[in-house]
Length: 175
Image (cartoon, rainbow, N blue to C red):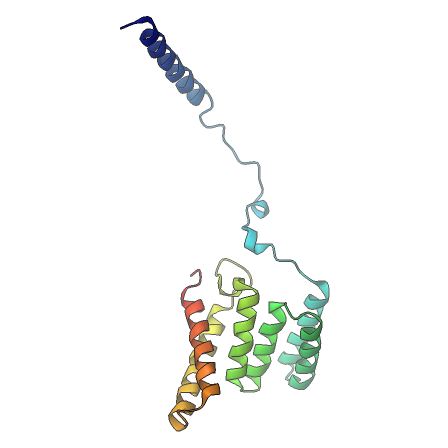
């Protein structure tokens, strides 16, 4: 063993001793100073438009009071101003459910989920998975019934593809 080998061995031994001393000295000191709201995932920070929030509250009130026509008109107006807001699309789907137009409702729900996937994430406050699953199953049974009557209807086949797409999104969601 020459001089360079002995120096290398001593250097490794000194590094091992100093690293173990450093680790044992700082053991148990790693405490997080963050609050719970700082630990939230990035997906929970959704940019909120105050006009959309106020309008969505008004639309919900109109839907609950069975004033569907006013709710639909207000929703269409907000969709015109903010076409990329998932909340408004979700409300439009709710309106179509109240009007018993489940196929149109599923189309709106599909657009809402495409705009904001948090509607399918159980860990967020926006979770709507159970409602969407119920609407998809109802729409699928309605589409299948209509396709039995008219199997060549291309529009129904397109709607069925959209429903299958949403069904896959729901199945693959978090939860």
